[in-house]
Length: 472
Image (cartoon, rainbow, N blue to C red; front, side, top):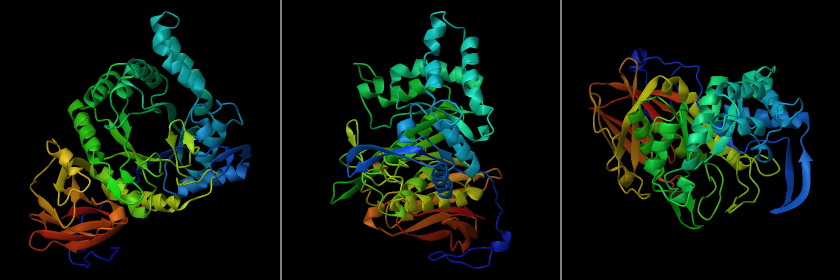
């Protein structure tokens, strides 16, 4: 059945000739700060010192909510992010694996013993305390209770560290090599700094390094089969809205680095789902969520994680957090749950098309460039002006498109209305397409056929929208 929707021309002409796509593969969607088996009770922002322990059914229900929201990978709750309790029966880690398995998702877990052995492996081997083979055996022994349990099918990998400095990369690289020998099918999970980090934050020493040096060192020293980073774009000062200017640049920079390396690592990022600090605002609509998702898809992304699923404490170190993640601090769903859930499930519905294509680059239509994102891309190696089929993009407001190609050489375009959703700007985007008469246009996970008239395909787009377009 061909689904028609507002703003996109519908009709049967060309439908019989439309290419057919299918894929059972889901888009990897994870989180930061998942669900624990207990939570601290707050009175406003005041910690009462009391803790609520979830029943087994309450805990499982929270995982049903995770699965219903389109997530594929769960992450430990705040109080167990760095020590999930080991593999002892009845521990948080085993309860989490069981719950994930029962609702059909995967889980990244934290085990302090696994992390300790991995991060101490290089030193232990260099000092002659262990051979590399012995450390591999130690790691295998530590993770075997998880992998051999009846819920081992849900184990996605182990959390190792977040935003490490460059001076840790050699230890991490050695640890990853050990882990890959012990558990080649599991994720050795590390997330990197964004391009806005700098100086000693990147170096971990009194000296400073550039982001170039930081990323190049990672690619040289750590052989993960993916690269993950975080960068959050939605700003507000309470009155005015704005976008972080290097949101797209970080994607562009890292895709360039991955292409030049040539190892075919997958590409992951974190997206914003909570207010924190002085600038980063809460999500105010589904469009705030889809805007981020479709921008990353247009850059050929392979997986996203939402920061955060559950709310951290009001103050975590130097950072102050709102109570507007998908779950509040008492694990009640917020309106953000509805926004992100809708975005996740919309993207999952797109995968029957997206998973059949390989990313080639992007094309820009800069009109106002309010957020100054496009200005950072002036020297990008990923800009495509035209192809055999694609002859450019124009728009009423800022827009851009990812350009993809399937195995048969057919092109696809992930078109994004790149305006801050809070500004509520609708857009009309025109793709100039040569040699094709019709196109599949996928919006909200639903397919329509639209005619290409005189080499032009016009798309009317709401704030935050992204369309996947396949000319034929």
